[in-house]
Image (cartoon, rainbow, N blue to C red):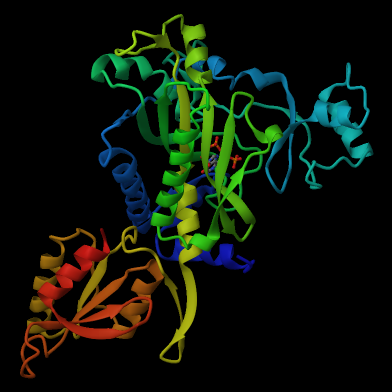
Length: 463
Ligand code: ATP
């Protein structure tokens, strides 16, 4: 995507049309936070529901959990999130990849022994050190990505806990609970949608990198095999890509990319991203990671509770391996908007529209009477709308301004269909009674159909 102004257009449309507002805006905002408005909530829910349908509801081998955001501090020790506490880290200002400042300096022959963080920063300036990708780096800082909170009512005696930095661990700590309560047989998965928090050093690019975001994840437990679960891994890679394409994003704007060895978390046996062709370049949209038995093994070690699986057929006990498929809701939301943004000229006028898939479009259709001061038209249009609302609740009503303006408003929020009730609907011309005009968003084409034909068309389109 090479329209550099596209992101600005999306940010402005998102605000103007009630999708996304800057967090705490009337107080000047809070960096790295955004609030979803009326249209944004609808789009966000549609994306999550579509994920839930494909990853949970349509499957017999997936269970769902909804774990707490606040977790025991030992969880983050076991997962390795608190270990990096004393590492001096720098971040590539463009790719946002993080590096150990001491490692980068050592690579160019600097003896970092006994260097303070400030000294390391000084050395980096002196040497004009760039990231391995050739970009500017942030100042080295000792920091932890986890956001800290205090719980307990008495000031001074608060217990320090972390808001979860990923939703993954909420699933793994419940592995035994799901096993004991549901008795699933391997392979099976545990799915979750929920918020995660990260102290990103450089939040930015609108919803792409924020400090509070929502994730959709499936942790799929398999029996370790000599191939490293290759078949299952490939299956989930493709399943995730198919899901992303199912959002309506054009296939040419999506691709797979394998992580190189140095990018992978130390426990990951294999890692692939689904990337989206964004105005900032190809960017991670989704991750499919082979986590080996790292999480279960570590939680077993740190909690002292056995997280092994007993194979009922062979009586063998082992720690399952994990394939994770994980993505951000906000990123899917942003990428769907970026991909759907269109400008064209229709009837000699420039217009903006969002070519969103009817499946995720916040409003499925808009119904309006041709004139708002003709009670017969209004009554009939209200009747059509209530019939359509039996198919889907988000059927808008608009009787403001002229019909062209109403269409433009719906185009900008991506409403796939607009239905107009006119005098012909009431039977002014023979043979047209009970027909209405259906206007298609992408082409602007208008055709007459009976109300029941329209109900069926919309029902099929939004599935
Ligand atoms: P990145 O490299 O972009 O920081 P990551 O590799 O740390 O991402 P994971 O920990 O694998 O990301 O998280 C899984 C998914 O969660 C990502 O693919 C992305 O969609 C989403 N995600 C991660 N961090 C953020 C963030 N700060 N803001 C919005 N979404 C995020």
